[in-house]
Image (cartoon, rainbow over all chains, first blue to last red; front, side, top):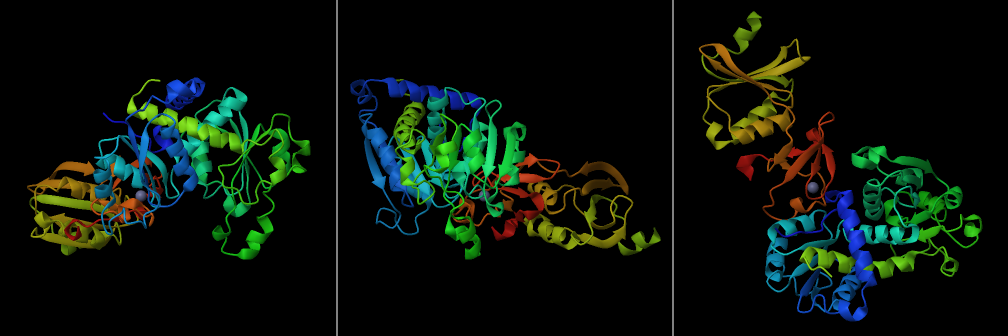
Length: 306
Length: 159
Ligand SMILES: [Zn+2]
């Protein structure tokens, strides 16, 4: 039976560990042998909404494994026939490709495609729901920094209510032992209750605060997200909180040694450029790890052992 | 008790849907009659009875021997907690309590307006129970979690 990567909620701890090991293995391979692993294989990227970073990351991952890429970058191009169902588009493209990465503005789109096709499907973002390769690359980045995910003290800061990156990361990290979450957000952007109460997260330890300063002193990692203006019905409320969740080098003067700052990018002003030169900056490592993790995912789903 | 027999006669044989929370009886009736195989069944409806089990209840009696399985799922969604009794020669011979189902397939619409199932044609919706106590269900597609009463029933004749 074919395998897909649609949602972090489908994965257990052994699955996560398998992906992390596979990524470490892929990273250690010499470039020359890596570049032959997927020779002759084709990745289709169907991006019904633009996301240049994610698309380039998938394309780079495939190119460096020796395979090739086809697809489209947004649904307004002539490549998507007007009125054609998503499943018909996917069933057509599956005749051209061995594996398919889909990004779509509707929640559940990747699942629909996975159930309609016979080739492995990778969800590269379905609306506000899931973006599992982002979560896996975040876990890989954390694993590389700290050696283990057990016992991690992680602060999640910014928009915790709507950020799918945060939601999936909570779901995934809750599968590890003794992870402590510090939730830093304005009251109206708090993490939804159901994420703290359901599944393995019910066992995890959560603390809530509205200020970033002490999280910086107590945690191993601060995961920043963007507070989006569109989320606020009242612009005054937005003005009040928009700078409360920004990190700069001054704030990091009291940081725990070894503290890492992570961010799914693109950033706007959550992280000042003066953080980039400090040893705390982790967000460009995430970009590099993203390519490695996506290679690990494609090799895994295609059943290729490196 | 005489009131009952006045309003809704006993049936010799058939199905009695009992303990429908008062006010939901007509909705349940509409669902039943939306099934083509049920449209011709002789039906009597009683509304707003006193009940020892729930505050006030509605009741429906149908002169038929069985309910379509999908209809049972529908009943569970529209009025969880109802009981279904099969009557022969004026006696109850079988009693089923309709409980919260583990999965709801094809009979409910997702409440999330951004869910792909509300945009892509002919996707069979699927919900699984994540919390039987609170009767909360997760959409298998958008992964949104909703209480059962917030799921909109898809009436089969309109599909
Ligand atoms: Zn849904």
